Image (cartoon, rainbow, N blue to C red):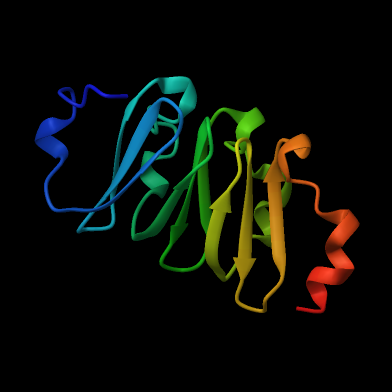
Length: 137
C-alpha cells in the first residue's frame, strides 16, 4: 500500500486517510474515496465505487474498510472474512454514528445507542454474550 503513484493525481483535497494492513483509503473534500494498495485488503474499491459518495468516515480492519455515508448508511469492501462483507447486517446499518474495527471485525454505534457488529466472529463480531450489558449503557 505504500506506493500511491497510480492514484497520485486523484489525491487532491484529502480530508481523512485510513489504513488496513496493506491498503489505504482517502476521503476527499467532495466526499468521494480513493483507495490504493493490495486489492484483497481493500486497495480495490471498484466494486463499490458508485456507492462511495458523501462519505463521512472510513475505518479499516486488517483487511477491509467500512465507510459511513452522510445518510448514516454503511458501505464495506475488502476481504469478506475481515469485515468487507456486511450483507448479513446491512439492513441494521442505519443511522450509524461511529465505526470502530478490530483485527478482522467491525462495530457500529447507531443513533439510538445500539451496536451492530460484523466480520470474523473470533475477532469480536459476535457480541451476543454481552448484548444485555450493552443495552444498559
